[in-house]
Length: 233
Ligand code: DC
Image 1 (spheres, rainbow, N blue to C red):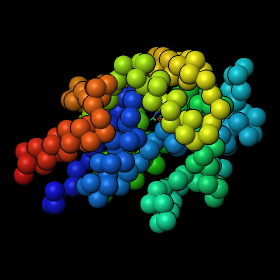
Image 2 (image 1 turned 180 degrees about the vertical axis):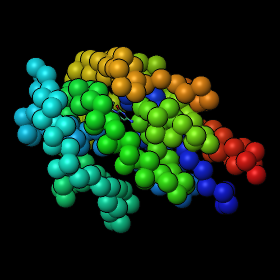
Image 3 (image 1 turned 90 degrees about the vertical axis):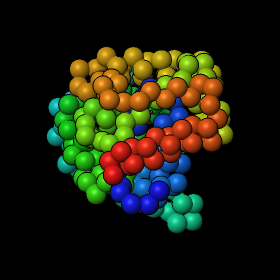
Image 4 (image 1 turned 60 degrees about the vertical axis):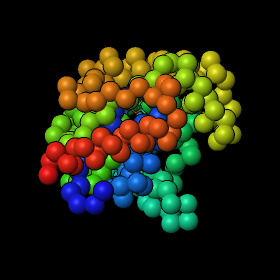
């Protein structure tokens, strides 16, 4: 699929396979992959370390003051062919996937100034096109003009089982109930927050992967890309 490069925006609920699809699409198309959830998770880790967020709430004004002290970068590791996220020079990829970060990230990602900073960085990352970016507001706020927008979903139990399996494979000690509570509460927070809530863009194509395997969902997405590029000429 050589030729014109487009912007692909993938949004959807927690744990419905956005990262898996986005990564494999980026490899197939030789595009840049951006996991925007990792960026919100890394800021959350920063805030947790500085005691700016816990189960009782967030210190919003201090977080806003500290935003300029946070630098984020995805740095490619040629050995694993992955691009882990670095927070102020430290590889935090495995730490941000843990349950404690998952439990606080909704509070941080609801802050307007945090989102404003993230969106600016994300827009710069995608300026040259040829990008697959996944998150909650990519097709609505970050790239409202993206040529292809996918809105991913899957039924709750399928999502919970997938996330549980993924966390156990990473040796994270967690129960199925904890995963279910977290996925449920993040869905609620993501769709009900005031700032850029998760909503399906009017021109997004819904991809329900409850009954699809990885190869099938990749094929569907690749066909959509091909069609889009053909239409654009
Ligand atoms: O994709 P993820 O589950 O790793 O994202 C972690 C959290 O970050 C998610 O619960 C909501 C937030 N997020 C967001 O608000 N906007 C994005 N574009 C991506 C993630």
